[in-house]
Length: 239
Image (cartoon, rainbow, N blue to C red; front, side):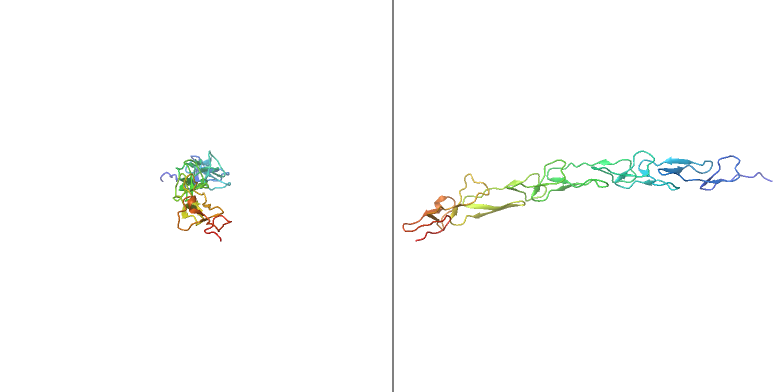
């Protein structure tokens, strides 16, 4: 008769001695934070700590699991993953660390929130708002006397005065406002006037003559003899 031959152990079994008559079943049980490796053929294998970026929450025969996006595990043998700290993020799985958020944006932009699995991005400021270049998380509203009618602005525009005889209203936010003529009985000169300076009223004893320019005080005419006007800003005198 021929010499007997040896048979390889099946998957999940091993024989550690040279004279084994049977194979033993691999014991894959490991504590939390560890997994079993190298069991088969002539080795029983051993428990090894989970690699960085993975974890194993409980004891058992199962392997280690990759950390999800927005989480990490540094070093070996973790039983859980940690969430990325404030101002850090991680968009990939099975990572040993998180990345630092970069909030830098150009003028006229702001950065959306960054954290966990999201790095955020730069967005344009809306109309009526502005922002200088930097690491800003929001845009600022235009101050009084200023406006911005386009998106993505690094500053606001200054409200401008109207020409003589007109007054500007509604300049703020997203609008430059509009210029409208002073009412009769009122006037406005252009020199040294701010954008929101009101029209001046004709003084008592005078009236605003309809049809005459409202660009200076000459619009206001003295009441004729036998007439009077007690109130300011009127368009006629009383007999």
